[in-house]
Length: 249
Image 1 (tube, one colour):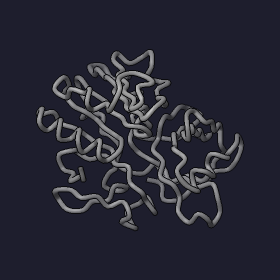
Image 2 (cartoon, one colour):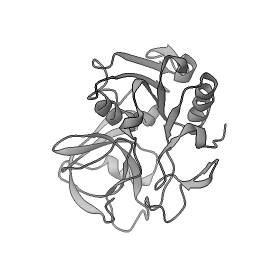
Image 3 (cartoon, one colour):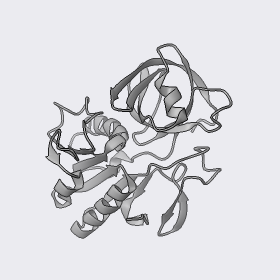
């Protein structure tokens, strides 16, 4: 893990859906799927950097998806090609690809599809792994550009029924069809999916999305409850076995 921020230049920053942007930063980065970076594009204020998961990586850039929800992400949305941005990372444990064998289901909710895109890209390179993707949104889907047309099975559900099935994606998801499930999305969605997987006897990995101040395990802002006590989502996660987490319904 790198312990200092590095400066880089924005490659591209574009709005891809309502309040959702795709930000690419120039440079070569060695990143595991599921890891994240702390980003900032300002001086002293806002005080805290923003944790953003990695959406994609190639030879010349790293890409993030972010949802504009506050002052920091509003500043990100104004960035243009060539603007400076500071990055700390990669941070967190990421997904262990050796655990993901056979029939693998990736289940994303909203902006939670972001880290699953890069995981899908990596898994698709492995022989003996069959990946399906299940994505849920309130309305128009986003972040599926690398998956559409290449994934053997892509299921989409939207709450307003504008695309795919109407309602929540986990209502249409059957865990027993898979050897292992991976999920990232709202905590209530992950909690319900963990219970559904446990009932089916299927292991599940989840990537926690928590507010963070430091990203390196010092501030404890991102603490989550587990059966082994409190753990830090940034340093001990963000990827956990679903069976070890205690989540609110």
